[in-house]
Image 1 (cartoon, rainbow, N blue to C red):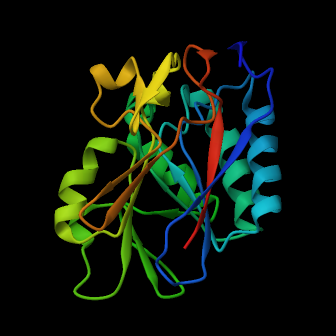
Image 2 (image 1 turned 135 degrees about the vertical axis):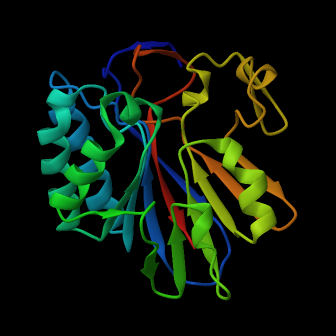
Length: 226
């Protein structure tokens, strides 16, 4: 692996299996950071991955746009994804800079589901976007942006938590146990997969970055087999 600047290398389709016995396939994409200059490329990469996986649902894990001018691109992408599978989204910190409500309305107007408002039901699984939605029974997962959501979601009964935000710290010099270094020295959940007390945290390294420079940390989306 060498330096990557921008979108020169192909997007990695990372596959993870979490044994929930549901026979479901999900696609989780976080940190799209859509801007007019690269939104078409990011959208094409994500649509290609979705066609390859043929998921039962597509989940967008926040940091969807960097600037308001990218909102029409987000609407087009959500609409195209919805032709392949139900699409749900949550917000990230960059979306707050644009305006969470503006991003939310863009997703809803394109036919997507805003998971922070309402859980998504896929087969026997409930997909939550808010800690206020914990069901009384049945398996559920938490679609998050921040990996720090994991401890509280695990205590509430989540079998699986999906998160992004950290980008793997973009520079990876090595790995110790589950942790990607040096980022894990400052961010506890900087890694790919964590197992704790019967619950699993999957952390995506994201589709791209606000400052798009990486080393040994490929851009990715995550296919989950449940």
